[in-house]
Length: 163
Image 1 (spheres, rainbow, N blue to C red):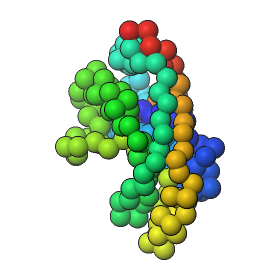
Image 2: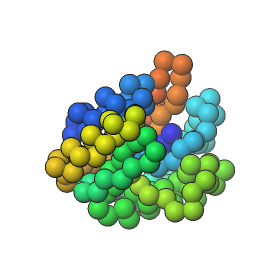
Image 3: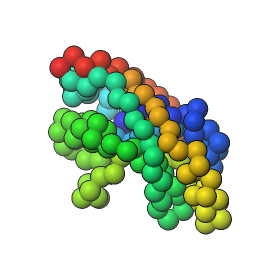
């Protein structure tokens, strides 16, 4: 998984209800999932990632909208353009790994904040809007791998806008 982890502190109150958080994944905006098996991440892949991300500087995101899917709640950035550009750049560099396996025609950058039964989702949907907007600055893209004991960051790519 390639992600923008920049939201842990403001989302801590809800993230305890997300199985990915319990497995070590920080609050994030997913850029590409699924990605390749971590054993395939060699220096050539790292170079492709650095090249794809080189044009991008840090991204300031304000999350002001709440969305949901069955059993989950997420935040959407007010301006999804910057994370969408990152997703498009990575999809162009790694066409063999389209976001969400190519399952969605329209991508909505988002940060999942909780997953659980309907009563939990409803409670968070009532509580979260009072705490919005949330602002986060993403200064890097992280590559995570899933192991038996959870999600582990294996590489961090600074967003320095060199392209």
